[in-house]
Image (cartoon, rainbow, N blue to C red; front, side, top):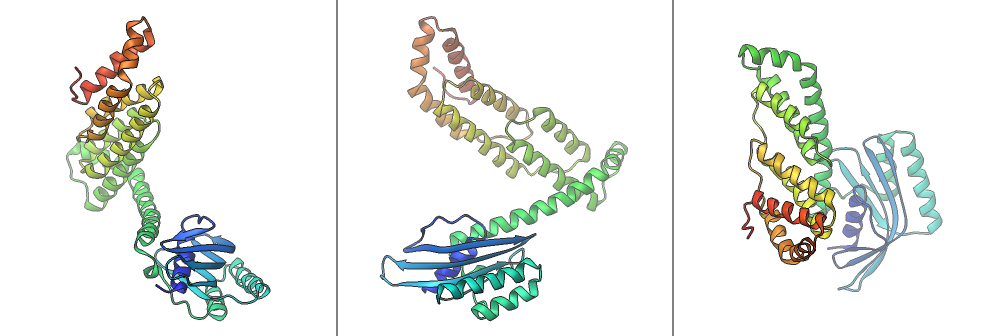
Length: 311
């Protein structure tokens, strides 16, 4: 792995996540003497002057880089060795001036003039950051697709309901839009804090009316992740009655949904809390503490709802 390739990795990944300074990339320590970024819609530009050192090979170097993201997977990065600091400042200003005018072709030509032909792309990233960048790109793309489908569905919702009442199968394009839109809206509601149970059941009614399939794998994962996060908060703060309220309500909601929620992690947390916290609440309840008594009863009910061995 050459130092200039590590520098390119730093430049490209910095467009998608905030970099610490100094930054550790495997066995390399990177210090940014200067870093600046710019955005124009979906287009992003990063300019930096960095020093690097390998903790294994003991080699080091100073590099100037410029990374450009034109949207989707179109990424490029130019890297060259450092020159005079004043020259770097002048170069950075020239590129920033061109980019600020919104002239993307001229920005690409400026990068070629200043740093040579851009020879690094997303394929140059280390595997972990390559996945991270792809996730950012795909998330943004899928959000656009989902918004388009949702607009189609909402514009024709009355027609969809009318056709469903007549027992007429939905045309495939409309059925596809309804499937993507309804599953997307359900996914957002299941991840929301707090969740709106009435809204969720309303969406499920629309799913049944439109006769479209549920993306049960994604919906279950979304709800499971949100539920596990709530349980972790409760385990860290068992005195918080509002967390207990939310967990009880969420478990009840999960039982009413047309797919099964995997609850092994909440079960493990419940057993651990019974071992660590339950005895203290039980003693307080036996001493006449009404709130502790209520907590004990509700905690037992939670165990029963998780199919745990309560006694």
